[in-house]
Image (cartoon, rainbow, N blue to C red; front, side):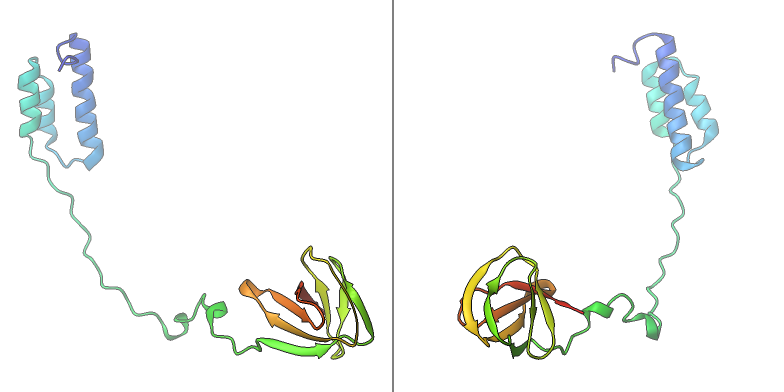
Length: 160
């Protein structure tokens, strides 16, 4: 190694760094007296061989414990929303009176009293009287309104 053949100061720094690394990494895993003895050697090859001959003790490992069984109430903790829902997949109603279409943000009142708001940026023009509608569930909790007389289904959300 070229670094070891440099000045005595560079060799001393390297030896000190190696000793410090060994002491810090294992919290006295290596024999400290042996490290000090190796540090005093002047010849790089001898010092390297000395460091290589030091026996490093392995750290004591903590015993591995088998996993404990969860408490009875803990089994469903955090899975409340993953419980199977027995919710309706769709509802059917109608829009009372004359319906001329929708634009984003429109509120549509159904005959069953529910109010639904168009929540996407779709627009539709259809002129019908008392059209039947079907509100069906979509992916990720969304709802779509299928309106008789058109093949377009705006994304909607229910208003209180």
